[in-house]
Length: 416
Image (cartoon, rainbow, N blue to C red):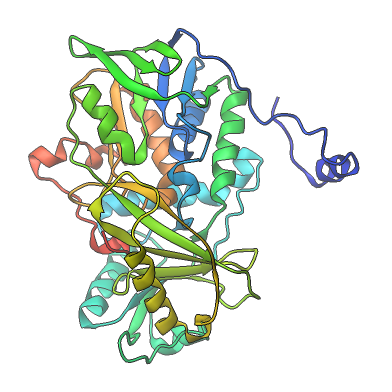
């Protein structure tokens, strides 16, 4: 029975001091065998389990998370959602995801706070202008809402921006009106709640230490709660995916780095869209609470820490203050880092591999959150059918052998 959330349930529970809410999902002990095991309890992993149960009829599924749900990159990002990528393969994947985002609150009966406030990608030099105009044209050919806006139009959208500063003059931007932001925790919670109702076991505080294989087939996973058997294992472990893959004898072309973000003290509404700049490695939006959510580029070295270097913060703040002088005296409340895994072509891996029954969803770099529902949807298809969906077929791990890369470094909008 689907748990209903409505204004009536909110009023009813407020009168009882919110003491009678039912638990959103169970906390079961692992079984000895599952038809499918998903390693990683973030949005991608929970979404994959949900679609496996809902669209493919599988019931004996486990999601195994070493910590708590959404404690990895799902809760450590800047929540930006867009689909204005350059290449056809990427555009189809991210547009599929954006269309799912637009109806996700209704489907999950849980408010994910998806706000389609638009996204600007700034151009600061002639190279930026040519590259962004090219991307706008490619987007239009794929039916994606994207347009070129000049400095005057940008000034109307974001009056507080200093478009004529000396170091970073703003020459124009691409603008995608349907893009926006969502609440990262809510996405994980919504998928977890509905997956649990469909019979998925969500097992927290259970670290997967090794993927066991034999004779070219997957057998299951060694965990901190013992060995769990399964003939199909999907790994969605973000920055630690390459580490787990190595335990199965698979070497993935990934580098893991810290990606940092920070949040300011809350202020009155001053910016009602998302503004990104690849040239200055900084992007900003304003949350519903009034905080400025500021993102930076990746650190310049491989790392598994969730902190990152202070020089990145300094460079990011310097750029933000030049673009928005009124932010100069604001205080920052907190800073964090997520571990992103990056492929050579800055595009994800959504693929089975040479070990039968073993599948990988990884390599999202800085673009993982925006792809959450689309990634989960096509990855579930790949696991259930043992065959790639047409949308994720170009993102096979085999492309690094064939050379059919999907080079999206320029569309990432932050430094890789």
